[in-house]
Image 1 (cartoon, rainbow, N blue to C red):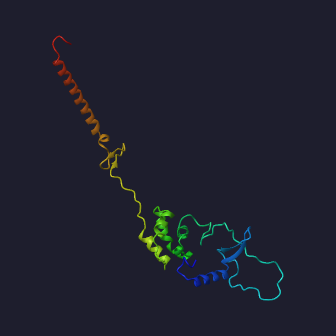
Image 2 (cartoon, helix red, strand yellow):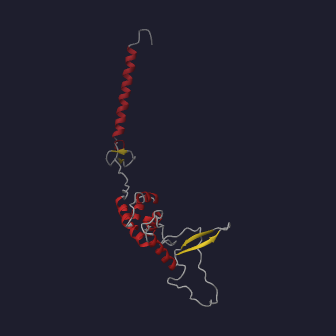
Image 3 (tube, rainbow, N blue to C red):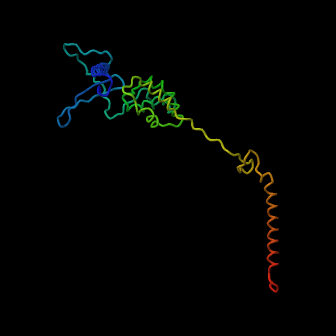
Length: 228
C-alpha cells in the first residue's frame, strides 16, 4: 500500500492501526488444508467493536459467553457510502454512487461520501446528456498527475472542462402541406391542393392530344398513293 501511495510506510502503518482500533480493519491468520498459513485482511463498512474499547486487564477470566464479532462474507461485494435500496435510480444520490463506482479502480481518486455528493450535480448533468459510466471513466481516469493532491479538484475540473454538448434535434428545412402533408417551401397548401396542379394537368392533357393528332396527320401525308 505504501509503494502505491504518496504517504510513507509509517503513515500507512499508523492509519491501519487506527482503523484496527476503531474496528474497521482486522488481519487474521488462516491455516490452509495443506498446512500452510496465510494472512487475510478484512475491511468492514461499520465498526465491529466499540470505538475506544480497551482490552481486558490482567486477572481471572470473567464468566459468560464469549462475544465474537461477526465475520463479513469473504465473497460479498463491499458496499459504497450512501448505498441503500431506498434511493431512486436518478438524482444526486444515484449520480454520487455512479461517481464512486467510476473512480473505485483508481486509488489516487479516493472520495468520501460528502465529496461525492458535492460533485453529484455535475455527474448528473453528464448522465442527462446521454453519457454512460464508461464515458465518465474515459474522461476522468486517464492521464492523472502523480501524486494527486486534491482528488475533488481534479475531478471537478475534468467534469466541467470535458462536459459533453447538449444533443439538439435539427429543425426541419421544409414545411408540410396542410392537407396532403407533401413538402412545401413554406407553410400552407401545396399547388395541387390549391387547384393549380389540376388545371395544369388538364392543359397538359390537351396539348398531348394535339401533338398526337398532328403526328398522325404527318404520317398519313407521307404514305405513297394506292396504299391505305
